[in-house]
Structures are given as C-alpha cells and as structure tokens.
Image 1 (cartoon, rainbow, N blue to C red):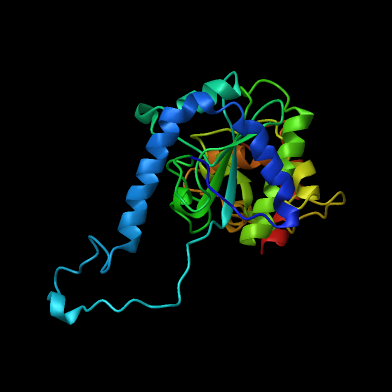
Image 2: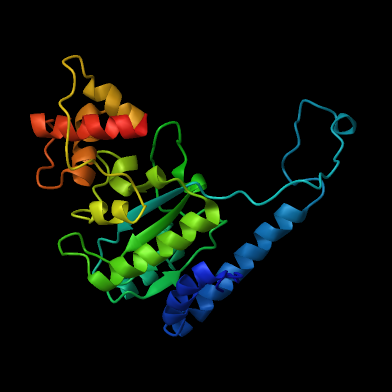
Length: 277
C-alpha cells in the first residue's frame, strides 16, 4: 500500500508523478498486502510501552523505568543515493523488489518513460545501499533514500526520466532539508563493488541543486596536495585507494574511469576538495 502524504504545493508535482505509476500496480495487490502487514508490525513495535527488546540486561528492570517523552519525531533521511537498475525494464525491477528472496528494494523507481513508482515509505529503511561507507556513515541504508533509475548500464538516460527524477529530488530536498552535497551515487559509497549510475548526467543535477560539481575554471593544486586525503574529505572510503579513485572518476570524470589520477583529474579533485571542506 502506498504511503499517504499531505503534499504542499511544491510537492504536488511529485504526487502527480506517483499517481501516474499507481495505475499499473494493480497486479501487485498481493505484495502491497504484505507491505501493509509488515508496516503494521513495525507500528506495533514502535508504539509498545516500554519499547520491546530494548532492555539493558545488566540493570534490574526497576532501575530502568519507562517515562515516555512528549518531544520526539520520526527519524528523517539525510542522503539520497542514486542507482541504475542494471535491468531491462521498470517492470523487471518492480518484480525483483517484490520478491522476498532477493532481499533488495529502493524507495523509488524511475522508469524510462518518466513514470515514478514509490515502493518504500521514506521513513522506513530500504535495502538498496548494501555494504557501503561515505565519510563517517557506515549504514547508508538507515540514513538515506534509495532511487533506482531504469537503465541497464549501457544506454543513455532518457529525458523524461531525468525530468521526473529532478522533480522527485526537489521534493525530497525540501521535505527533509537534505544538503546538496548529500545527493550521491551507489559507486561513491561502494568503491570497487558498484559502478552505478554509470555515464549519469551529474553536472545537470548539480546545476539543479542536487550534488556538487567542479567549476569551469580550475586552479592548479599546490605541490603538496594530498589526493588521498582530498578523496577522504569528500567522503570516499580510501581503504582501497585505487577503487576510490575509480569511483570518483565514474562520478566526476566519466570519459576515463581508470584507477589512476591524471593531472587533469587532480585539477577537478582539488576544486571539489575545497567545496567539501
């Protein structure tokens, strides 16, 4: 069952996009029912007083009384992670994400035709990031919204889906106050393991306020410029430095995704490093 949101006027376009996708989800009635049941189970866990399975065993129960505060809210996402599906159609991806055995999901899927499907409530944890790290964040599934873009990894992204994606991102950025720098790709958070979204128009998204991009005029880095430290400050996991370099180039260079930094790559890296500091 789709989550019910109260949309403000800026979010109304996103609502319309989601409704476009709704007409084709009738065949997913059975999995929607499973979603509703699982969500109800989480609701029971959340409203339990005192919380279930959160006792501190070393303390006697009478020393840990439950006093419910009136000041709290739902945890909100702070990152958006973009993926390409590596499949041949949105329908194939929807099927993959509705099979329990796959154990994978995302919050949104954007079809080649621009239709947007929501599959997980923004406030819930989807299984899209896998083993990942960005800066000090080591559980991106818990702190991010995952968006899968219908693309097999070998074709251009379509104009309708990029336009729809920008609409979705605009609504999410405003709703959760997500910083521009926190719109990143799967390859960024999983160097060496993932390479998506590949050949993606990151510059265009950055110009719309989603992600950072380097300036058109670049300054030479100083002689003592530490490229590894710069990658780490931007957010990359440099445990495998060559993989981190490749991930950086998938996002920001694209024409050359080797595991070595060329002099031109270092100009880009230095410029971005100053933006992330």
